[in-house]
Length: 157
Image 1 (cartoon, rainbow, N blue to C red):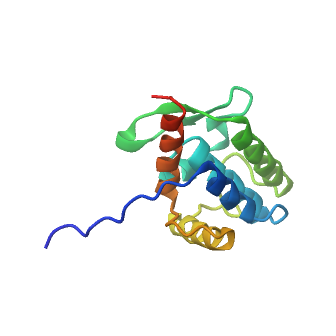
Image 2: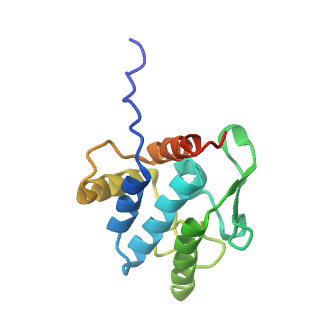
């Protein structure tokens, strides 16, 4: 028996990504965190494992960059961070501080400072997509593909 057939990637438009981000709560701490996570997955084009492995020291809001310390193949790289994603991250950083979550916890952590399971992210994205009326299949890696498609459409190699 061979590998199971992969489902096709459905690229989201920037408008659909914005709708996805908007559906997360602006007031609930988990919504603030999830907005920042979706923004990082899309605007920085990170894999979900890379985003969930980030620590505060890896993000430089002033320089507009994120250092991925262990990407695919164990490689390190630095990616850009646009002002929209930086604003969501800054809001989540403020919320982390209010809750007493220190720099030893991953950037995207539970409200108690623990790790988040990738499964939680997939389920949250499905809920947000349904709430936003997005009929495409929405998942973390699809945000990475959507980021690449956006760059390609705008002439970035």
